[in-house]
Length: 264
Image (cartoon, rainbow, N blue to C red; front, side, top):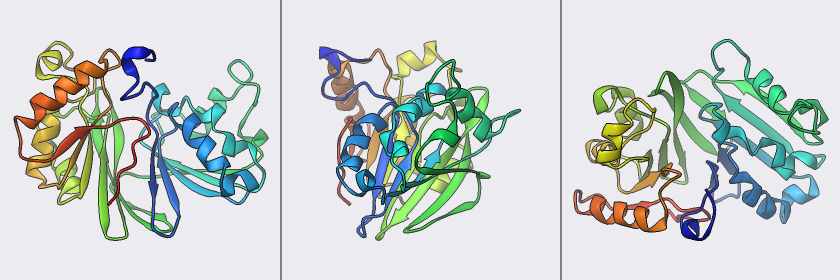
């Protein structure tokens, strides 16, 4: 969503960047948020064709890949960009992207027409990933009728866990999710619904704020970022959500907001 009621938390879809102390970068998902990130990247080495960026993909729902045709570092020769994700059932990850770039939807007409060196790699959740400058562990988590990939990322002694687009069976966090989140410095967790909304929309593949808090408490994390807000939630609604959430837990928490930079 966009408009005056969404100015503080933002209306773009998922794109979360990690930057290590040595300057190496890592991106999770290719939602519309990458259009703003691209402007910053082009002002640095990516504008000169000297950028290198691994992209981890949680899943291929449109809100997590719709920024692909508009991510301008793809259009600069010399940049090296790798996309890593689990394959959807019945189709390769490469074919998903080729479909999105076919001439019915995009003038780019395929990955092969991107100027940058772009590679696509299949990953198998439950394993670690070879990402230079970062330690990356993965786990599968349930998301409605499918599975998404959650990530645990460590660099410079700081660990961030990304657990979005998840709805646990009977709202009970899975063993895999709790193990991935254990002791993290920051947990970014799906919190699309209030408890009342969740009762109405059970089965949509997203979590309540209460569930995010439960994972944070049971995994003994240092901070919690409530993520993947309901598109209908304007700034004032999210403010109230955070206020009520803080009354229910001692874990420091806040609502994720577009353009926010979190220091270790």
